[in-house]
Length: 65
Image (cartoon, rainbow, N blue to C red; front, side, top):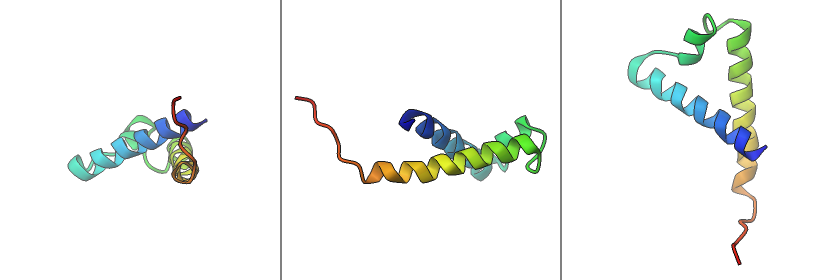
């Protein structure tokens, strides 16, 4: 679950980088516009993954023995 959430957060970060640098929304381009059903699903999944990743900040790190 952690890796899936991290992958989705990375996708969101790359999308925001493209928006910031080139004013181009990759998700909207792939799924037929910002308001399309599929785009909204991707945006929602990225947002939920970001919320889930907050829990990673408060977890104890395992140390290799």
